[in-house]
Amino acid sequence: MAPYAVHITYRHPWKGLQEEWSNVFHYNLDFLQGQETDWSEMAGRVITEMKKLHGPGVTVVRARIHGPTNAGAAADVMRFVQDYNTPCTGAVGGFIPPELAVIAEVYVGRGPRGGKQFLRKYVHSVYFPSGGGNSDKGGSVQALIASEKAPYIAALNELKTITVNANGTPICTPNGKQLPLGSAWVVKDYTGTRQFRRRGKRRRVV
Image (cartoon, rainbow, N blue to C red; front, side):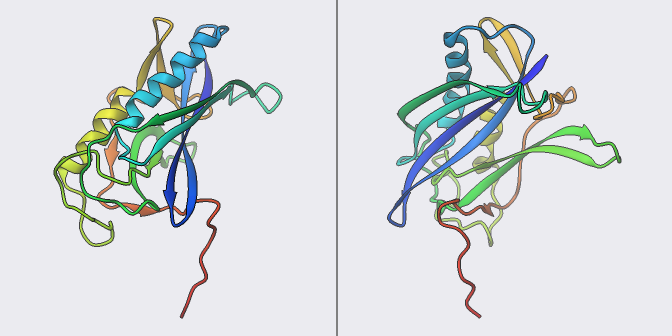
């Protein structure tokens, strides 16, 4: 099996700029992906679930797939690039400032020195994908409640294994390590700041 990276890029207007950011998922393939339709299906499976986690104004604009990601730079080549203009479909719950991200993680086992390792995703939803929950939550004062976490857990658990060309394709780390049996996504209690790349660090005023 070989790991391939699926990059999904989103766009949202914020403070006068069209900001873009990406989520990356890695999947182990145990069958030959030689057809353009297979790569397109692979990207489409991820987009279908991630659209549910982003509110109005967020658009999926691009998908890229490359790999294998564990065999050196020469082998890690681009397999698929597709532009989209697909509005996201998450229900409108409480507003989340766009530079804040809901953080989800899943346990992938222990490293060589015994420390726990996790896959972690930062989701700039802009609005919670739930009609309930607390509105206008900035993330630094109030903990996320169960109804706000539930849509992230449901969508990301759907992405633990996707079906491509009638084959089950499991999520993995960039080096191909698969999840232990029973591992499930967990959403952190608080959102985190993850500034957009083009904006850069802000000057600190003391």
